[in-house]
Image (cartoon, rainbow, N blue to C red; front, side, top):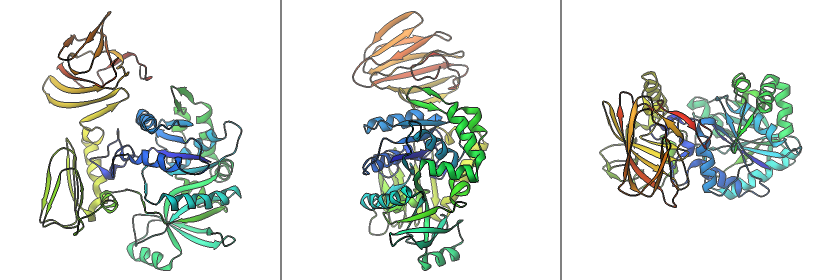
Length: 469
């Protein structure tokens, strides 16, 4: 069995914590490990699970690789989508990759941004699903609902197969209104659509070829035209971009006669909006929950996420408050789904807060923009041990580097030197330069930029060990 971890989502409803360059699956939304890491750990513990195939947005490739490395996981493949095309094409290229060695494994498809508290119950459901998948069925995992929820799709259970706990799928239904959702839950026949599946790679590709041959053909072309880049598989941009954007539900599961469902009651949470995060957290006697330096007074059923400072709530009910270094969101739980409207307004205004945090992660480490004004910017730069920035130059800015801790190996033009703590160096406009950390501890330095334009796109990379030149 090969787990297929889908990690291409943007998580805009968890703004301002989740942003396009570092979406929710790569954040510690509910605990120290990220949702992506929790997913990798969960599938690693399953009996018979091989190394996972990860399907990720190409902009998140180093995040995915590094977070897997920290766990000691060496993925079977990290496949990079040049553009988002929904779940059917993503699963298709993963299924093709899973068969690349001539075998026909079971594949367990799971999003990378869900919580499952009861891993024992999850493992039991996977075992049941594998038995059905070995018989050629395409299995979905239906979440046993504990309330009427209008934010999820539903799956109706049909006849049970051999008293096994596995049911035929009677039908898939869209997100209902509240009255319909209440009727679904009361009937006991419906489950929430989890977005998790299990099937043989060949069975899925065969059904995709029957119902959406255009998606299968485009996925095969993108896979055949892929190229290897470091540990990544870059799908062919032209072929994948031409692939229709379709969910696996619409493309296959709602059309196939071989759909089955296993019920899953394991503390599942899709962490789709801030109230879902609140639900996942321990609460005080009046229903408040928080992370960071948080204080509640005369408040009930509230959630606060504080990253950088004390956040205190007084006399409030049913609010969620999210504080980051450059943005604060205050909302009522009833309007949690509308956070994406804030994101859309910011995007229309070309605001950088939709894409970047103040701290921006790179394959070599990170930088934090401490201060910025007309013609100057100050950053705190952290370079990981053994990491190296690209050999580059700038058309519009000069830079001054001051080492705070660690040791930096600096190349300016044809000259190379070592900088220790409290030493500094100046890089004129247009001069080629690079920075490397040859030490065993992180290199911390302050960078002062000055010039007529200070944007991140004023970087001309000449050489880069991460393939970005």
